[in-house]
Image (tube, rainbow, N blue to C red; front, side, top):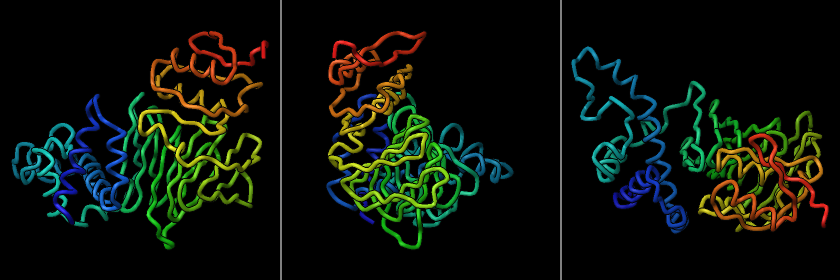
Length: 315
C-alpha cells in the first residue's frame, strides 16, 4: 500500500464531516487513479468497522481497567479515524491492521443513513462501495445483499464469483462488477449504468432486463421496464453538487428534491411519468421547484406542507 495515497484518503474522509466539503474535487481525486478509490474504500471500511466494534472493544477490555482506551484507541463516543490524531495515524492504522478487519463478515444488518442534504460515502465491503444521496438509506443484509430507500451510486469491482444484489421498491438489481446509479421514489425505480452491465428484475418476473453501460432502465408499479439510452456524464451528477437529468421521470426528480431538502415534493398522476432533461442546482425546496417548473413546463401548487407538481394548462 502507498502511505501517501492512504493518508490523502483519510484526509478526504475527514473532510466529509465539514460543511465546506469540495465534492467535485473529491470526485476528481477518486477518478484520477484506480488506487485512490481502493485506498478510500480501505480507509472508509475500516472507519465503519471501528465505529461498529467500539462497544465490543469496550466490553472486552473493561476488566483490564483501560478507562475507555484500547491500545491507544479511544472507545468513548464515536471512534472515527479522523479523531485518532489525523490522517497520518489513519494511514498507519490501515498499514498495520492489513486485511484482518477488512475481511470481517457482516453478520447483522447494518444501515447507513445519509442526513438531509448530505451525501455519505460507504465502503460496504472489499471491492464494493456506494455513495448514498442525502435523505436516503442503504442497508447491508449480508454478503452482497443490499436494500435501498432513495438514491445511491454503486461501484463494484469485477468478481464473477460474487454477485451484488440491490433490492429497491420490489425490484432486484444484480451485478458482478460495474458502476451504476439507482433511484426510487418508493414506487418507480430507475437504474443507469456508466460501466459494465446490471440486470433489473421486476416484482414477480422471471426474466430480468439487462442494462448495459450508456443505458437506463425505468420500472413502475405495473412491473413494466423501459430501456433508453442515457448520457453517462449525467449519471450520479448529484455527487459533485448538481442534479443532472437525462430523460428521468418527474416523480423521481421530485423525490430527489424531497430527500435533499427534507421537505415534501410530489407529482400528480398526469405528470409523474413525464420525463425531464436538465440541470438543477442545489438550493432550497422553493428554488429547486421553481427551476423545475420553468424547465419542465409544469404547474405548482401547495397541498398541506407539500408542493404538488401538475400539468400547466397553458401548454
